[in-house]
Image 1: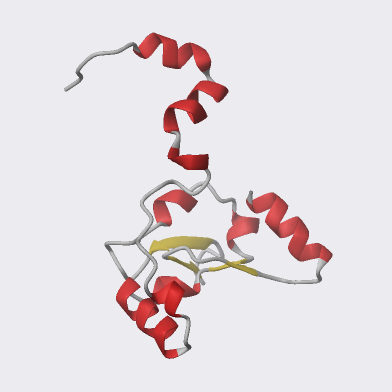
Image 2: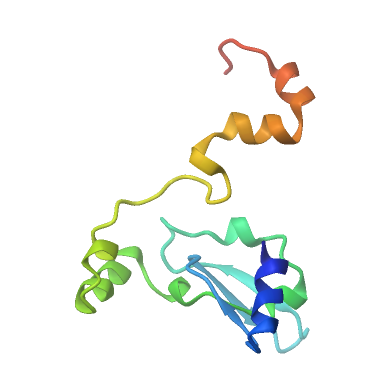
Amino acid sequence: KWTALLRRADDLDCDFIATGHYANVRKDEKTGRWVLFKGLDQNKDQSYALWGLPQAQLARSIFPLGQFTKPAIREMAREYGLIRVADKKDSYEICFIPDNDYRGFLKRRNPEAIAAIGKGHFK
C-alpha cells in the first residue's frame, strides 16, 4: 500500500504522506538512517505494523498521532467539533483484512497452509 500511496503523493507533488498510525519516525543524525519508534501511547502503538518499510518510504512518512495518546486525540476531535470521530469505538482489526476475515484472507493467499492447520483445540 505504501508504494501506491507514495506514487499518488508524487502525482500530487507532495513530498510526504501522513497517516493515522500511532508510531514515530526520526532520522538518526549519526547514521543518516530513518528509525521507527513506538508511539507515545503504548496501548495503541502501531510501529510493529510498519517495521518493514524501507528507508526511502520512512523518509517520506509522517505519523502525527504518534506524539499523542488516544484520549488526547479524542479530546482534540471533540474540540474541533468532530463528535463522530471523538466517540467512535476503538478498532482492533487489522486494517487490510476485509470484514476481519482472517481465515479467508490467509486462505486466498496460501490455501495449502490453512488446510494443513486442521481443526481442534490448540494450546
